[in-house]
Length: 252
Image (cartoon, rainbow, N blue to C red; front, side, top):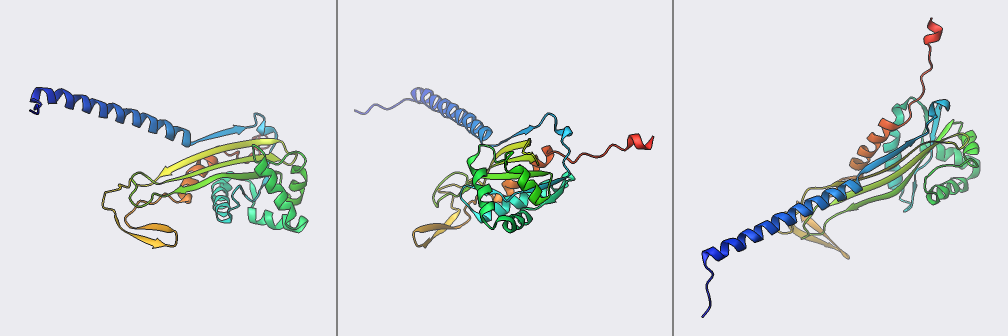
């Protein structure tokens, strides 16, 4: 004869299961928070004696990217340029820099500088390249930016979770001698809306070649522009401002 469980035996089992679920959820929340802490952050470094090296003009080199994506480079160049143009310096855009370097050494000079930025830990010009590039561009300082990661992770139809967009950028500012003035290392990950596998938000699947794409209200990963705005806003707050001449002595 099959033994029936009494009410008194079921209640303790239910409580134990509930406590286990709560403990698991708490642990998962803690792990998630720790992951987000690692994925989003910015580290700045500024030369202690920066005020002793006044900079009036800055040339921004074309962004370097490991994957060679022209679209990503343009997005980063535009975002960084817009964020830093309020620093008070005279700026030379990456487009103008690219044209001037082409005139000086065809396409080989620009490619050589790009390769150096990709190989170094910090994407900066050294004391060998900075003086020549500075004279060529007629700028007192050089800003170089490298794209270490730009990735959008979309969810497949039927998957649960949140799509994510991640960006990792590094930048360095040197003066005309190659002296390091400022560096930054930024990473940022944004999440899209929660997507449920059986939430009814997918009304169909479009088959095209080897890829399947969801049709309906699936959650999309944030655009790169949204992530870049957050990163570049932090850069603008910490980027060295142009020194304002002290005219108090002349006024007296």
